[in-house]
Amino acid sequence: MPEGIYHFPRGFLWGSATAAHQVEGNNTNNNWSRWEKTPGKIKNNEKSGAACDWWDGNWKEDLTRAKESGQNSHRLSIEWSRIQPTQETWDDKALYKYVEIVRWMVNHEMTPMVTLHHFTDPLWLVDQGGWENPNTPILFARFCRKAVDALKDYVNLWITINEPNVYVMEGWIEGKFPPGKSSLGLAATVLEHLVRGHAAAYKIIHELQPNAQVGVAVNYRSLKPAHDWNPLDKMPAAFQNQIFNNAFHSCLKTGLLNMVLKKVKIPEAANTQDFIGLNYYSRDIVHFDITKPGNLFGRLEYPKDADLSTTGFIANIPEGLWDGLKWAHHFELPIIITENGVEDKDDSLRPRYLIEHLHQVWKAANYNWRIKGYFHWSLVDNFEWERGWSQRFGLWGLDVKTQERIRRKSVDLYEEICKENGISNQMVEKYAPEILNKLFPSY
Image 1 (cartoon, rainbow, N blue to C red):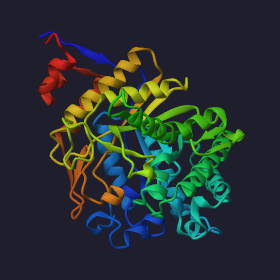
Image 2 (cartoon, one colour; image 1 turned 180 degrees about the horizontal axis):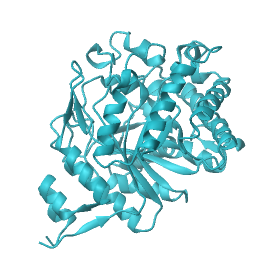
Image 3 (cartoon, rainbow, N blue to C red; image 1 turned 45 degrees about the vertical axis):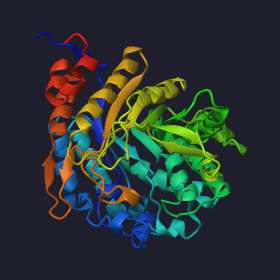
Image 4 (cartoon, rainbow, N blue to C red; image 1 turned 60 degrees about the vertical axis):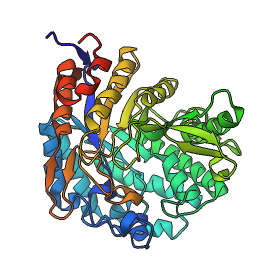
């Protein structure tokens, strides 16, 4: 059989992503460590505990596995509370551990991408009001200066803040993340402060490292009204799209933070992104629901015939990633897929999810859009925030009790994709034959 291949651009970054609190283990000085101790906040009252035990050295084994399986990059985050355990003190030994990790990556020809804020805040900051406090952007910038100055010899790709939209939505509207509040007014305040924190960090990074590439990772949610003809469905879909998808990143282009009910001019934020970090997992259908004022009268659900993940948390809708890529493209900046993946303990959905979503990325690259890389979530099963250990996103599985890594077949699939820099019909036939005719109609 002749081979058909969808090739990606030369120099494409192929990697996976992790976050400090989810993999390091024994983080005891941040908002999530406190949240985990509060009964009812985490599914089954589970705790991150040792997590994937990266802090005690397992990072090297996991990154070695990633390198050996064809990945040429990795996205990780650094834990603010380790580097600055109190407002007055810095832990240079902890900071040096991150230097050791990124130096190892560079020495093994892996490009590091470092996230400076991934959902966690030091307790000393939380006790001052966290991101509700207008002084926090200044404190965050101070931390960024310390971290970037230490890592700049090895890191050129920076994410200042991961998913500010999710951080605000879950912490100040839905209450699933700390601090567990439900206030649109406070949510707007926190989003404004996050913009100011990013803008300050962006300027510091470029001061220390003029050629750095700096972005923000947004969780893009493809939001579609349940009925295109119904203005009641279209209204909450449009409002949610503006607040959840557009507001933060548009402000980094224009300097105007438009939160529908409130607009704030932040001129120092204009033109403070060098690439778009795009996280995508699924699409939502939006129904008008008068009982959901906190969600701007929009109730979200998946299509009735959706291809669902193990727990129903994610629907496999690759067309939604295309929506996200089109949205990102209008900013006229390079695009990096900074997260994409599915929870799938049995590894039965992940192969087709991965292939179908990467096919959407290939389509965008084939249009000569500046798609620079793809980071799969996640390298190894990890602690999934308020959902605890109930979901398995890793290419590698994890036995939480023994720290044993379990090689799933998706590791082999992703290895073939990374090393080929493309998707072939033979890969699809081998790992997800049910979609062969969809991706390669002539075979």
